[in-house]
Amino acid sequence: MKALLWLGLLLLFPLNAATVVVHGSVPLETLSQSQLRNIFTLRQTQWPDGTPVKVIVLADSSPLHQRFCREQLRLFPYQLTGIWDKRSFSGTGRRPQQVDSMAAMLELVRTEAGAIGYVEAHYVGSAVKEVRIE
Image 1 (cartoon, rainbow, N blue to C red):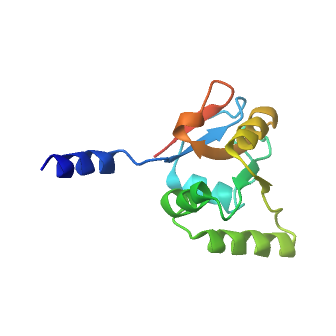
Image 2: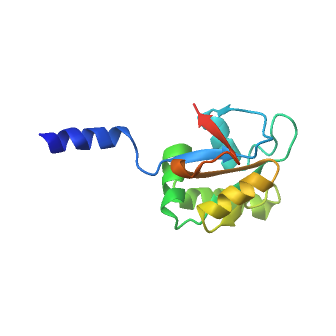
């Protein structure tokens, strides 16, 4: 019985959930699910103040990237890659910059104006701004 109770509690708090982070100068606190998807599919290319959006992602093989795609964007990683390829080949967008670790993600988001990325929740610090997804 206790095991079932613990399992239920664990399901309430997803392990290693992806948290969206942006550069400190990005002028917003929340994004809708559709806005987030538009940003990561390269449809939204500027923030409300006109600053260009710079998307930063982890490798397709990263478990966090796979969870972020499925849970936040409602896409499989291969679908997102296909969208990026189409935009890149058609000249209507550039593939996001890819990093190999959450530390590299945080560093780029911290230093690049207009940057957006994602990390595990416990990695978020004061150097970047966390954005709520509604």
